[in-house]
Length: 360
Picture (cartoon, helix red, strand yellow):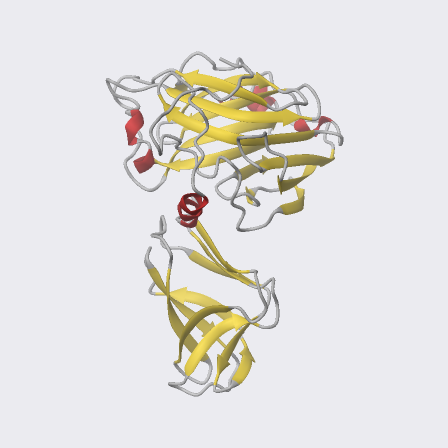
């Protein structure tokens, strides 16, 4: 079912929404990034991943304060900046969220008693388009896609996807890997759109049937697309969008990605001690258990403060890490005194960040 409506007058259990950051309120990496299209990744709003391939089209992605009243102040906005009207077979553009299998067991997919999934979301665009939304079972290579139309006003779309009982052989894996993708198709070449759209039931994937019938976001540089209020829940009814406390949303996002810094000059990231003249280390406890052992990246200029002096770092890394704690290593050229206390901090740079990444 697709229709505009006011919020349902329904009171349902807290935690029914399986989508994380469906209100687009958390953006640890950035609030606006230009020139996207040659590749994808996690770019602005947390948990929302861009998959893009083989297109000359480019766009700006931003967290924008233009959400529908009573739902969210924020939305994701995609703004086409370079058009691509010559669509090669392998081109694609998708906004997606990936789900751990262990968070999907309530669906009971692939076995007797499997449940329906209802998806709802608010969307608008600069003009009337037809786009697609897909549920893709990565564990068993099965999928289903629904089409929806946009207008220049916010519209809530609702779709109920049938239970996938299959033959008992396609449940989601009960682990921390990616088992399901919620994918919003915005551009596709014939490899993805040259067949017949699979809309009726989950089926073994035929790639050409995944995005048949959609328009192209890259058709014109005037094109904009906005989305927020994304909710995926069990059962045949789209309930009112769940208004989650921001601290809960942040904690859920930090399971996958944690960004420290970016708020002030000389910001402290970790406190430890010098191991040698060229290395210091500190234990860093993540605020929540991460999905997997994270990788570490820094941006801006980090320094070590030890013995009353600032020494620029050559490299920052983690060692002996788990999903709860890591030893953060600060390497410098020389000048540290073994055993002295040490602080890793930004060097008068409010944009410096230390980030831990455990994304799907």
